Length: 100
Image (tube, rainbow, N blue to C red; front, side, top):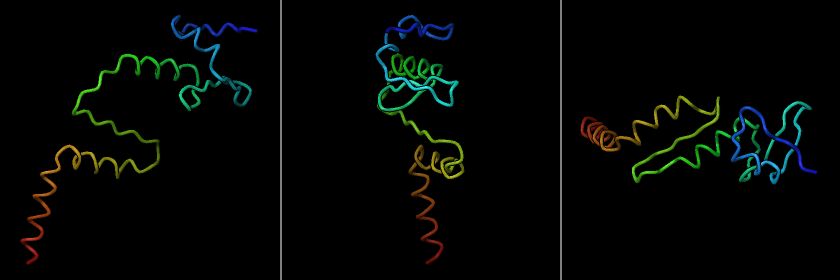
């Protein structure tokens, strides 16, 4: 039996896809949909599909993703190192010279 998964937040292009995705009810209130190995609530699923369909990567793109409370301070320190590795190498050389 097909269900009507349309809502104001659901794009008409995604509605047919919802009928084919595995679906679970979480805590009796939220419907979750499995797409590409991950469970999504409907608004997040719509956003993920929209982002994937419109994303055009460039050769120099860097994407860093993390969950809350999983080392954001460490990640903030890592970003400048990734973006400018030569500055870190120069700083390491200066530390080596001054310690000799």
